[in-house]
Length: 112
Length: 112
Figure 1 (cartoon, each protein chain N blue to C red):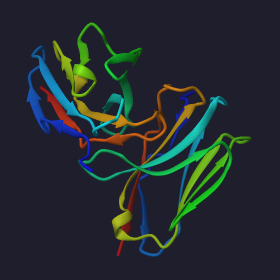
Figure 2: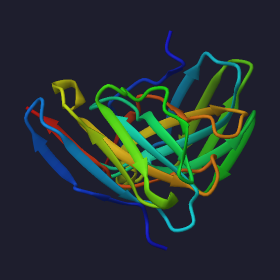
Figure 3: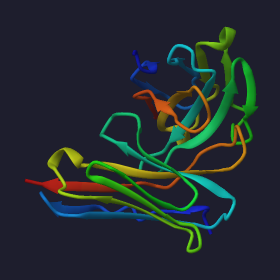
Figure 4: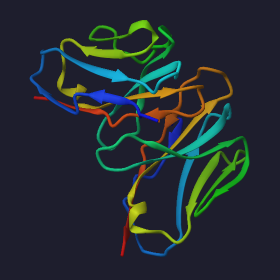
């Protein structure tokens, strides 16, 4: 079993839809959880960052972490064509200097 | 603030040839990472530097890959000799601390 599992999609939605992206993980030592957005031919950029369990909201984006289920989610409200990208979940253990482990990424396409 | 700079953007070589990639991190960022991203996969850490010391190179194929960070600033990643399976995007990232990484646009390597 891989440490981080993410459905690669692709996921296609109409403009204005609510999008739900998810990752599961197997290592209970993960404490820091991130979502990165990657546009075609670009490097990933940090979108959301959370520590341990709970919710975090930033504009149209909400990140949720459920450590009991080893499940993290990213919700995008009122999706826009500019949200079309690959979304990568990433996580790491609570030790300084430990590496980020990335999921495969989910490709999202929002049509106008 | 200038981002992480990488060059070249694209490189095509034949197998068994050598290749080098260059990265200039964001000024003041002590930590520098090299990631390999194979098509359809999430980024995988190759090596992590803290200033000019190696923190983690456990997933670097040391028989063919080498990396150095000069004076704790710029870094080069070299592959010698290249194999077909090395075809990927090589991403450099830097961080002021280990939680939030800032990525460059990457070097896309094709090995024929």
